[in-house]
Structure formats: C-alpha cells, structure tokens
Amino acid sequence: MELTRRELVAAFLGSAVASSACKRGDAPLPPIPGAVVDRAVEVGHRLRGGPLPLAQAVEPVDVLVVGGGVAGLSAAWRLMGAGVKDVRVVELEAEVGGTSRSGRNGVSAFPWGAHYLPAPLEDKGPVARLLREMGAMTGVDAHGLPTFEEELLIQEPDERVFYQGHWYEGLYLRAGATPEDLAELARFEARMNAFAAARDAKGRKAFAVPTALSSDDAEWTALDALSMAQWLTREGFRSARLKWLVDYACRDDYGAMSEHVSAWAGIWYFAARQDGRGERSEGFLSWPEGNGRLVQQLASSLPPRAVERDVLAHTVTPGEQGCRVDALDARTGQPRAFQARQVVLACPRFIAAHVVEPWRRERPSWLGAFSYAPWVVANLTLSSSPVSRGFPLAWDNVFYESRSLGYVVATHQLLRQDERGPTVLTWYLPMTGADVKAEREKALSARYADWEALVMADLRPAHPGIAAQAQRLEVQRWGHAMVRPTPGFIWGPERRAAARSLGRHLHFAHTDLGGLALFEEANWFGVKAAERVLAELEVRSESWL
Image (cartoon, rainbow, N blue to C red; front, side, top):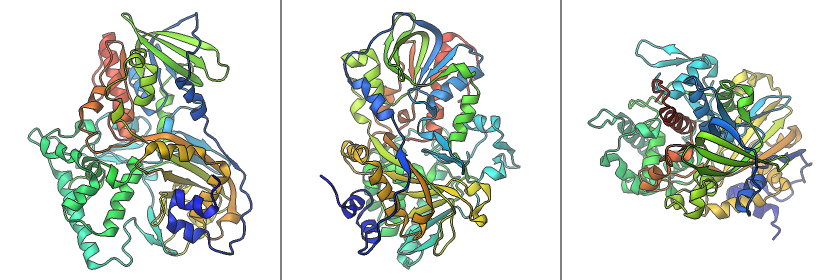
C-alpha cells in the first residue's frame, strides 16, 4: 500500500516529526542524487536457498577466518601477532569492517556505522594494545591512567539536542526542566556512580569493559532478569526527561527502547566506562571515518593477499583433522573450497546456524535467544555546514522528538567548523520496535525516494535551508545491525553456550557473543577465539586478554 508522505514519516520517525516536517504549503523539494548502496541482503540470502555447488579442488590453509568484521580481523591480528603466517580471512562484502566500515568522497571520509570508541580507562587488554600500535594511546599519566593523542579526542562542542525549534547544549534537555526533573537526574547519576564503583569480593568491577570482565555475583546479575524500564519504575524514577535520556542510551548502543533492554545492560551503559566518581573516561576517540580507522589498523597487520573479499562461505563441516569450508565467489558464482586446520567463524549466530553443517541438521537450542535490531545509516554530503538556531553545530546532533538518533558531523575533527565549508552528515535510524522481523521488513522495503524523504523530513525543521545545500545522499541498510541485550540474555545460559568451540577445530567470534554490539566486545571475542586456535596449534604466546 502506498503511504502518503505524512504517513511515511510518522511510521519511521514518529508523529512529532511528521507534524513538523509536513506542514501545509511546503513546496516540493528538488530530488537529491543518491542511492541505496548495500548489497549484502541479496547475496547473503543465498544461504537460505537450496544446495549450492561444491568445488572439486580444495585449498589448504592453517587458519581460516570466516568473516571480515571487527571480530574476524581481530582474530587474524592476534594470530599474526603470535607469528602464525598461514592465515586467510574471507569476507562476503567488497569491503571489510562490517558495521564499522567507512566510505569516502571528495569532501571527507565518513562512517557507515560505528563512529567512535570510548577512551579506555586502562592501558591493558587488546583494545589498548591496538590503540598503542596506531599511536592513538600515547602513554600513562602520573596516576597510571592512559593518555591519548589530543587531536583524536572529540573536540567541543561535542553534543547538542534539538527541541521545538532550537538547539540546546548537551544531551539532557535542561531547558524547561523542573526542580523535580533535575533532582531525579542527580539521584540517577549518583546511583550510576555507585554501580561504577562497586566491586565484588574478587576485586572485579560489577560492570566492566568488556562484559566478560564483569562480576558474575548474583547481586549484580539479577538485574539482567528485568528490563531497564522496570528498574526505573521500581526505583521511583518518573521524570519524562530522564526516561528520554535512558531510552536514548538504549537506542544508541542497543537498538531498542528501555522496555526491551535488560536492566543490567542499561546500567552498564552508564556505569562501565566511568570510575565511580562521575568521570566517564578521558572522552571519546573518533576519526572522520569513525571506527573505520580501527578497521584499517587491524587490516594493515595482515599481508594484502591474506584477505579475500566477495567470498560467500556457506558450509563449514568439522572433521577429525580440521574443517572443510565450502564457499562461492560472490561475483562469478564459482564454487571454492578450503581445508583448514583451524577455523574461526566470525559471523552472527543466526548466520552460523545456517553455515555450520551439524547445526543445519539439528537447530541449536540457543538460537532463539538471539535478537537483532535493524538500522539504517545515511550519509548526506552538503555544500556547506548547516545553519542552526541556538547552540552551535556539534559533533553529535540529536533530535529530541524523533525516533532517529540525529547525525554526527564527519568533518568535526578537522577544525573546519568556522569555515562553513562542505561537510558530510551521517544520520542514524535504529528500528526499535518490539517485532524485529517487522522492523526489518519495513526498513528493507523502503525505496531510495522514501529514505530521501525521511532524511530531509528529519533535518529540515532544524536546518530550514539544508535542501539547497544537499549534493548527494547514500543509504546503507543493516538488517541485523545490533544484537539486542533483552532481559535475561546477558547472563542467560544460551549466550554462553553459543560461544563454546565445536570440537577442537571450530571456534566462534562475534560481538553478539558478548550481548552488546560494541567494538570492545567484537575485539575481545576475536582475540579470545584466536587464543583458542593458538592453543590447538601449540603455539606459545602470552595472552593478550
């Protein structure tokens, strides 16, 4: 059924945006050149079809990593660091990086997904090692805390929020807040500080980065059984502005509203990356291409021929001496096959269930526990920076009344804000409905013209002249962008069962194994899988975890 423009905007962005964007008398906008640029949906769905052709010739390899996202690249990076030379990475897409992938045009590099990394609180662990390798972490201060390249830390102004015609500083909407609203905010922040400072009898943080280092004491894990919204109600938090802030956090990191996010995960967002005194680490690290810069660093550790793109691995068959992996060249359709001593399968669980041959015959019991939120990311190139009312253009620009997350400015770190030069805005829309299948179908059914209308409907109320500045719009749909930490999932048995190696030759790595779709989780599980491979290959190397 064809929707009117108002109905389309209301369905995706909410009625407030539809009312603001679809006023009577608005002149039609000139079309913006652009396209929907993703293709993995069509290629990846070949896994659900009938039997695929098998190759006669088999290529031997010591370690095959299936999946070139952050987890797969992290596994290969770790293996190379231990001196394992015969490592191959195969990736379905034409570019590696998964949801940390980036793009570039004549104006700037820009992210296609994750766009920042919170500065680590410690100088140990694989993320800290990676940052040292790329020169982003420069050392430690007198207190033993890591220091970072100043130009990589997000410059001010870093955040603002748009509400009823004006921009305001920060993410919490203080304009018009009552004394009761502000008292609730202070009480909430105090609770989060207490959670951040909490330690168990073994000295472990109650909420740590990565999640694998968090305390498993029941005092904390019991929070996983209820939703974040239920926890807020139980603790007497009733402010609509605080509820908005918590919902924003859940949408930002988990692709869901607080009603569908575990309270443990919701608290983790506010507590894990601070020291218990209200300091949330030194800041955020970012580049014009977002976390694509981290992907480039991981990939640069591998020989050029070690990474093969446009390869659809469709069957992994474990055996006594290793695994056979059958694949297709995604460009030509020609079959290929690998015989690997060790395999790291670095893909989401819903794909692994289709790819691992024994799991086709017997559906894994844990599969139903995994839920994934679809996202849409659009990059809009402008001839000049957008004009704003109120607080000036920031790195992160959020719309209070929209279901989108607003946009980040790719050129923010280039110190060009005062020059009014061309820029790229990266716009984010998490599809947060409870029915993820329906949300996915809605996102994938929208045409380019629909996305053009939606992006401009979201931006024009805050930037009335932006249509004349728009030069090109490109849209990326992520059908399964983020694993959702639904109540009971983080500390439930299914997630842990899904992470176990299958025999001695097949190991798993992906951010969904940690329950949070974050760079630190993907990196941790990639390195962890690689260390299992090293143990099986009897390669001695000090742990990076």
